[in-house]
Image 1: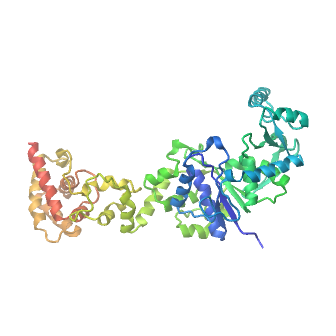
Image 2: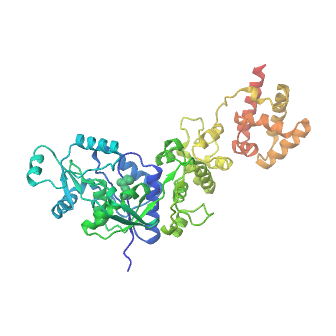
Image 3: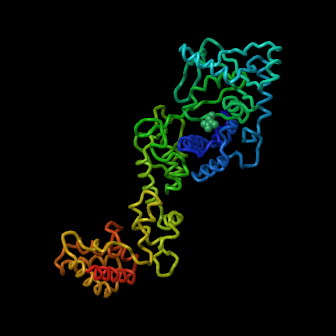
Length: 489
Ligand code: GLU
């Protein structure tokens, strides 16, 4: 029987989670959900210098927002594998460290930071391997005791000096590392906290993780981990290193390519389902063409066999396009609910007053035009019951003069006032017929009205907008435009 799939997302709470972190979370979550396995969140908070207060909450909030749920984690009642904060598992690491020292697989190192710095400089100058030179490998008990009186040691793992280590990655196959290039690395720091390498190997084993799926930057650590597994007599999990994420210019993804923090995307009005879909495609594909996947489709189709080995390219234009698709997919009432938190509360769009159009009636005219929820606010702000502020010269259509603008406004008013069926279709027919009577192009008439009704030259479709504004508000705005034209003289 194959053991149950147990995968983990193991963030370090050192700042806001970025797209790369969340991509790792998404792949692990999808794999757990598609195999009926467990998804575990483990907080790797052993680097006390780099801890950022509040980062754990931000990480969990980002996961929640993306709709990734976990079976075990720091905020859930501790099961048999907890605690899920590494800082609360120090006793375990200490016991295992002592065991490795007793076995001779690890040793205490008393070298000062100054000595190590000097050592590195000399190595760099001599162009030899940069890494620990093994000075404390075989200290006598007496020397150790003498150093211990003044210095807290670190603990290093003894790596073989020669030979090779073959590591297997699920995506890349066997990779052979030259042992002489890997130094005796630190497993326990002088503050009594383990290093990432040590704690993650112990925890992945203790938490019965079946697949270690993580960013490709950890591939170079794999031989260290493999040696730790072997020294501890642990069975190796399956390692899956996810391809690096690059910007469109093929340099490592960074701030230069747009926001990297996932919560910035939330604030910019991206939908979690769009982000999930987008992140799933950063290194995984079903085939050469499918791009849009609902949450359930992703779970149904995700396999680690289709994780690629070449770099994934982050393309903000593609993400914006995808977000637009997800926005158009929402029903009007869903979209109105999503947009509401993004509306500027101080805006004059007093959606709550009885004379105002409902947001749900407005959203159809902007649905095709927005790529993020935040763009909606600016686009619909003219729907409020307030005096529009605009430059009256905008009312003068291209190629015509202000007399024409006045004629259009004056003549259109009684026609619209008489219109009993104030709907898109009727307004459309009525205004087109009127343009013919005025011997003007329809576009010229519409452009005057567009500015009168919205205060801008680029706006959602005119007749729909008029229907939503309603007859009274539309007439009021035409009156306002007429006054503006008169005062211009
Ligand atoms: N704490 C590591 C990180 O935040 C986790 C690496 C791993 O998944 O093993 O990148």
